[in-house]
Every structure is written in structure tokens, then in C-alpha cells.
Image (cartoon, rainbow, N blue to C red; front, side, top):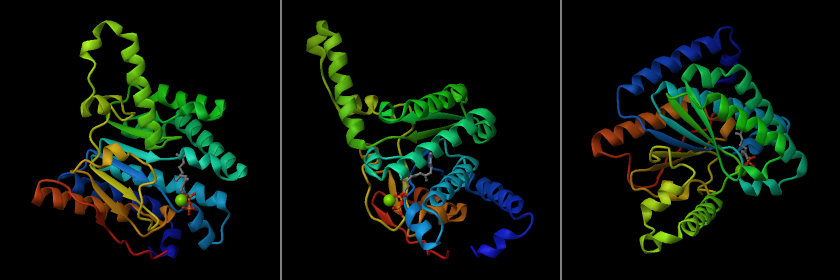
Length: 280
Ligand code: FPP
Ligand code: MG
């Protein structure tokens, strides 16, 4: 998208209308029920655009809001966003502080005004090892969960701070703890794949149908590993940095997913690399 177009008066309004129309078109075909987003490339984008690193993360949040809007307009029931990896705590302390502040500010706004959550009836769920976060951030996040807990139209899983290995460690601890509580039924102690699925943080979400990662990096970074190996989950790698990833890029991916699902009965069944040309 040429940047000067975005400065035209009324651009956002027109964009919003197009998004609704395109969302409705996508809605007529098969739509993934659950989409995961690895929003990578905020710092590289900031560097390339000669803006402050902090600004890169803020633009990353804006990009996330626009993409989520499109997903929910298109009929997606659940989105899981990778907002903060547990490993991100190893970044320089000022960057960790900015990211924590960003989470606090944005989720305070969401709780106070409820824009996205209210408009789309979204239930916010915080997934991850929340006790690793500063107490004030935990409080804000819990407040946004509390405020939106009765919403039923769609779900936003905010993974913060999250890694799959931590999720799996946590679920094993939970299973063992429940087993120890329930000593009498020792003979019934049996773990299979469905036991694991029931203990995942995503246990209330539909199966993951589509995982999108930006920044041209081909790895999963410990995100939803158990969930994304399902043969019906398509994994799409995009060559753009997250703040440059537009709703139109997401549309192309959704249409492609719908097309594959319509013709082959599933999204792809294999890892597909989709190159979206970076025009920014
Ligand atoms: C990855 O880019 C991005 C993050 C670690 C943070 C993701 C956060 C957002 C997109 C904003 C949403 C925030 C909240 C609070 C929900 P990077 O920093 O790894 O950049 P790089 O890959 O270019 O180094
Ligand atoms: Mg990165």
C-alpha cells in the first residue's frame, strides 16, 4: 500500500468499509474457526523506517487491532496472539518495561472503553505463565478478562507470557497434582492425547486451523506447538514485518485457506510458505 494514500482524508473510513465488505465476502466461504498469530518483526520494521523501537511495538499493536477486526468481521471465532514470549524477559530491561507498559495501557483502554471487545462481543482470555508478569500488569489483564467474560461472539487469547514448552510443563504438573488429589481412583489413571488437549491453556478454544507468522522467519518460536501439528492446521509464513502486515494481506491468506478447504476439504495439510511482497 502506498503510504501517501493513507494520508488522504477519509482513508480510515473507506478502509473500514472495505474491510467490512471483504469480511462479508470471506464469510460466504469456509472460514478458519481459530487463527494463531506470531506477530514478528516490530524492531526490524522500526530500524528500517528510522523510527524509535518503542514506536515499532506501538505500530505492532495497531496492526494487531486491524487484523483482529478483519478476522472477527470474517467470522473467525477465536484468535490467539503471541504478545510476549517468556524468553522476551531476557531482552534489555527498558524494552521489557515498554512492552509491559504497552500491555498495561492498551488493556486498561480495552477495559475502560471496551471498543474491540464491545463491538465484536469478544471474550478476552489471558494464556500463559501470568505470575511471571509484574503485579500491576497482571491486575490489568485480569480486569480485562473479568470485564469481557460474558461475551460470547468470539474469543481473543492473549498469550502473555507464553511458550509451548511452559504450557506443556504446566499441564503435566496439573495432571499429576489432580491425580495425587484423587488417590482412590489409581487404577483409572490414564493419559492419552485427549487428556493433554484438555489441560492445554487453549482447552476451551476450537482446534487451531491457521497459524500465520510474519517477518520472513521460518520457525514457530515455541508457539502453540501441540495445537499446530494437527494435519488440518495450515501454517503460513509471510515476508512482511508485522507492523507492515495489512488486513489485505490477511484477506489473501483467508481466501487461500477457504479455497483449499473448499476444494480439498481441509486447509492444506502441509506447511505452506506464502510470500507476500513487502511493498513498504
Ligand atoms: C515481535 O517483534 C514482537 C513482540 C515481541 C511483541 C509483540 C507485541 C505486539 C505486536 C504488540 C501487541 C502488544 C500487546 C500488549 C498485546 P520483535 O520485537 O521480535 O521484532 P524483531 O523480530 O524485528 O526483532
Ligand atoms: Mg522477533
